[in-house]
Amino acid sequence: FYDECLRKYGSITVWRYCTEIFDYLSLSAIIDGKIFCVHGGLSPSIQTLDQIRAIDRKQEVPHDGPMCDLLWSDPEDMQGWGVSPRGAGYLFGHDVVAQFNAANSIELICRAHQLVMEGYKWHFSETVLTVWSAPNYCYRCGNVAAILELDEHLDRDFTIFEAAPQESRGIPSKKPQPDYFL
Image (cartoon, rainbow, N blue to C red; front, top):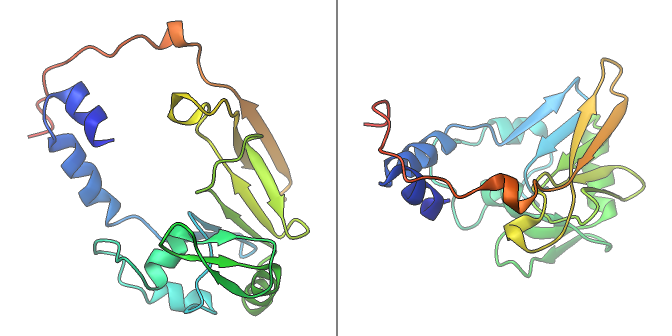
């Protein structure tokens, strides 16, 4: 992203503003009290949604701890908690999900963070869903991407899409930095 901003705008100013804004984004969201949306997954330090609300989000993401776990943890076919091979966050099993969902009256954990070749993937009897929305990740993975749309009854509809053809993407021109990025 840094390189893309530098290439497109000729300086790192846009990148710097984006990283500052990131420090103010929500760590998670709840849809109709039933769907918990998070980038990565769960944390062994968090049992309730109120514990997430208490995290001071306006900071750089630490290398460990609850905030880090919410961003970098992954579901795994196992029991309990495991060490993540990524070096940040944890692996969490179906029993951890069942416990968290029951404690918080959650029906579904919706997350991203892991490449899914088919665009989306269900885990643990449809209690966790990974949605991946970057087609042909890194211009080399050949995966499709997905968007999950929920209606007013929380019925799910997936839209699957492929990357734009290479010839339609073109090479972005090196533009002068817009005046609004001072």
